[in-house]
Image 1: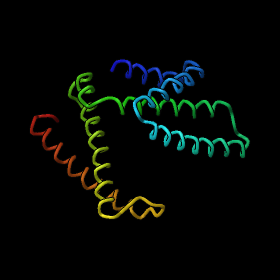
Image 2: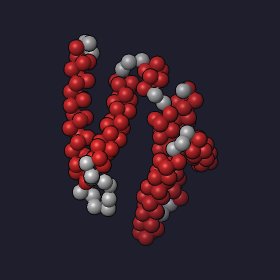
Image 3: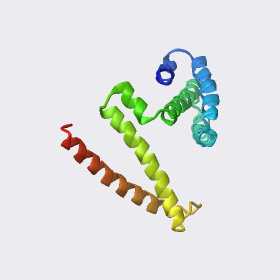
Image 4: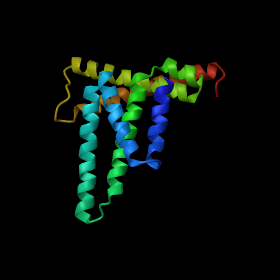
Length: 168
């Protein structure tokens, strides 16, 4: 647990230390994410980052404002995202609660985990009804509406439970 926290902290301050540290963090995070079975997630993150970075760098070159520092910032963003992805995908809410106690951070992390499970359950229920993800994005409105309704109801339930316990 402390190794993961340390890795996230080092990643976040690496921007101010040295460019090679950012590359080392990327090279460290990638095999760890693959080891934990997050190959598909890592692939999607890499594709999204490559696409976005290509657009940004292409526009900079086109407009004549490209600097090597921009590429460094993009690499730092990728390193930060992979470190945070590693932390959230390998840390249970119980570990967070043990580390920081029962406060806003641990409740928020628990709710993030719950929101992810709601997303997966909603996707499965929509697929069972015959709505499958396709190139036509009209199915997204059903997904978002379902998720928002479920999350708003759950937020209200959690708020009432915390008030009943005396948490303000």
